[in-house]
Image (cartoon, rainbow, N blue to C red; front, side, top):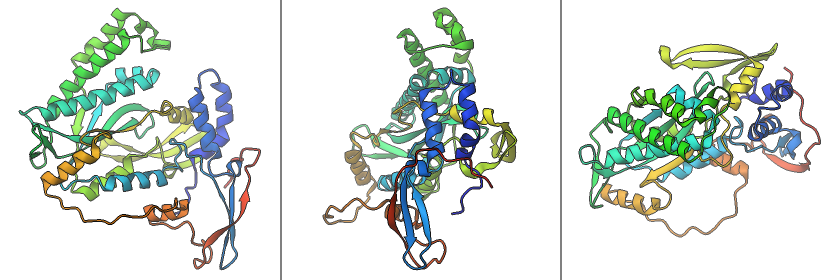
Length: 400
């Protein structure tokens, strides 16, 4: 795969130092750590090893990755491994994609209280889907689903929302039947929206009463309870956007979709067009105008600011599983789902334990692309001939 002409790392290396100085009082430790990790990723600063082709003698350094989950270069292997683990969980049924969004007023609160408000978002969505699905008037079954947090739009502005991937059916209350959704229809989005809004605002008010929310700058006035409730009052009447996309064609399409969404970061390196004169240009898709492809140019400081809006709290899980896909009872309940759906699994023998595979072998297994083939002669294989210790300085900005 051809290396992108520009990378987010290039933006940070070229403009990050000045940005840190200008925003020294407002940058969080987590944001600084993300910037540093991306700047150093796959450079001599992290060390690595020297490889040589066993046929033509071509040599190349292979530097270590930062493995930060916000780094555009470190997601391929993690994504592929995660998808392989999900392959065994797919069921022979239709799948649905439901998206839950929050109003701009909630997004403003979320940015200053990420861990609390993101947690409320997951909780409200999970309670909404499970409650409506369990209602005999709608489906009357226990469903399972996974939810993926995204906090960005194509223009990198802060837009927290959850993508949910849901099998089209569930287990009956007595555990004896698989209850399937109607073809092409999961649950009524208007009903989902109303319950989601009520549950979210209830949990948000509880968090306020328990002193879990903080307010700064223009939101400082919301520390007063009466003012906070007045702020929420109009949101109880507005429409909260919940929408169901077209059902997937089958389990294979589900995996293809998940491969695009699960380990995505705010912007991929492939979308960057230019980094020069203190500006960053990139592709973006305007969903409000027929998915029109446009080019956006931002001042470098604004680009960095927008990218850092989406740094997650330490340890926060942005992919979560619920219902019969919940971690605690997943294997037993999936086995029951397969039984009810008449799925016959092939018998497998006991596989002896094996040594942990080399990362290059694992990468080829999961992505189909080899890291060992020589890029020059295409006949030999690259083998490690030396260890490269970590350098004592950061890499310079790449010139073209």
